[in-house]
Amino acid sequence: MALHMAVEITKNSGVSLTAQIQSYLRKEISGGILHPGTWLPSSRRLAHDLDVSRSVVVEAYGQLVAEGYLEATQGAGTRVVDHLDTAPPVVPALLDEGHVPAVRWDLRTGGRNLPVFPRREWLACYQRVLQTATPADHDYPPLAGTPRLRTELARYLGRARGVRTDAGRLVVTSGFAQALGLLCAVLRQDGGGRLGIEDPGHPRQRQFVRESGVRPVPVPVDDEGIDVDALAASGVRAVLVTPAHQFPTGVVLSPRRRAALVRWARDVDGLIVEDDYNGGLWYARDPRPLALQRLAPDHVVHAGTVSKSLAPGLRLGWLAAPAELRDRLLRVRARHDLGTESLTQLTFAELLAGGLFDRHLRRLNARCRDRRDALEEAVRRHLPGAAVIGPPAGLHAYVRLPRHTDEAALVARALDRSVMVRGGAAYHVRPRHQEPALVVGHAHLPRSGVTEAIRALAT
Ligand SMILES: Cc1ncc(COP(=O)(O)O)c(C=O)c1O
Image 1 (cartoon, rainbow, N blue to C red):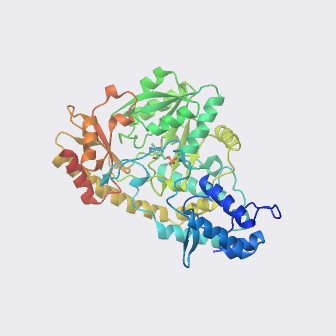
Image 2 (cartoon, protein in one colour; image 1 turned 30 degrees about the horizontal axis):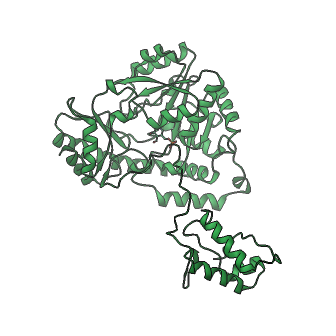
Image 3 (cartoon, rainbow, N blue to C red; image 1 turned 45 degrees about the horizontal axis):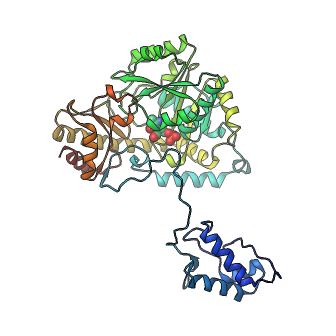
C-alpha cells in the first residue's frame, strides 16, 4: 500500500534526520494524533516522500519499535501498537447511550431491530447508477434532493401512503432527524419556540427538540392516539405526531381524532408534523390507514425515513411540506449543509422505480409478522395478564403488563437473565399516569429467541 504520512523535519538544522523523525512520531503517537493500529508508509515510501535516504527511516522506525511505540510485522509493514492507550477519551455523541452490557437478548428498539438489508438489490441498483451517472450526478446535488428521487418518492408516497404531493414540494433529508431539526429552526424563527410532543414518545427526539432551542410540550396519548383536547388546552401551535403507529405504544390515531386534530390545526392556523417513521411496515390484516397529510396538506408536514425499512445508517429521509414552508426549510438548510449524498439518493430512486423496495417490504413484513405472532403467543403463555397492544406493525411492540407489576424491578432483574429491555417509563414524561409496560423490539430476533426472551422475563 502506497500510504502517505505527513512528517515535519528541517534539513540542515544540526539535529539528525533520524532523531527528528523519531521525535516527531513519538510526539504524534503520545498525543493521540497517530492512533493505535495506524499503518505507516514503508521505509522506502517515506524516504522517497521526505527525500532522505532509506536508512534514515529504517533507523527511526527500528528505534520506535524498540521503545514499544511501533510494531513491525514481516510482510505486512509497520504500525502504531494497539495497546498504547494514549488517545484522548472519545466524547459520546449527543444522543449515544454510552456503555451497555453484552446480553443474550437485546430487545431495545433502534437500528439493531432491522433484520435484513437487501444487499443484492441495493448493489445492483448502485451499480446501475454508477454505470449511467453523468458528471452532474457527481456534482453537488440540489438542496431539495435529486429530481429523480423526488419524482419516484412522489409516485411512491401517492401510491402507498395516499400523500398529496409532487416532486416540487418534496425535500430529501438526512433522515427524519434533519427534517425535525429544520422544522425546529423555523419554529424558532417564528418566535413560537414550543412543539407539542406525544407522551409517551421518543425520549431522544424530546432531547433533540429541546437542544434545538424549542420547548417540547408533552401531550398525553390514550388508546385512540394523541388527546386533541389536551393539545388545544396546551396553547401550542405545532405538534409532532406518529399517527400511523404511535411511538412507542403502537396505537393508531382513530378517524375521530384525525378529524379533530386537523380541525385544531385549521382553528389555530397551526402545523402538524406527521412522523411516518414506520414506512411500509404494516402486517395487520386490516388495511393500513393512509397518511394524515392528505386531510390537510396545507397544515401537515408528512415526513418519512428509510431508518426502519432499509437502514438508519443510510441517513435518508424526506418531507412533503406546503410550498411556502418548504422554501423556508430550504433556506435554513442552506446555512448548514449542501445536500444529501447523491449516489445514495439515486440508488434509492432505482430501488423504488423497479418495484424492488416493495418486494423488500413484503419480505420484511412477512418476517416481522412471524416474530409478532411468536411474541403474542409467548406473552399469552408466559405472562398472564399482559397483552400486546396496537395492530401488528413495525419492528417493535408494546406489551402492557398487569397493574401490580413493578416495571422497574422487572427491567432490572431481566438483565440477570441476560435480557435487555426498556420499560414504558423510559418513554413517558409523566410516568405517574403510566401503566407498567415493556417496549419490545422483536423483528431482529430468531423466532425461538422471542419465546426464550419472554420466558426469561416471566421467570
Ligand atoms: C419515532 C421515530 N421517528 C423517526 C425515527 C427515524 O429517525 P431518522 O430518520 O433520523 O433515523 C425513528 C427511528 O428510530 C423513530 O423511532
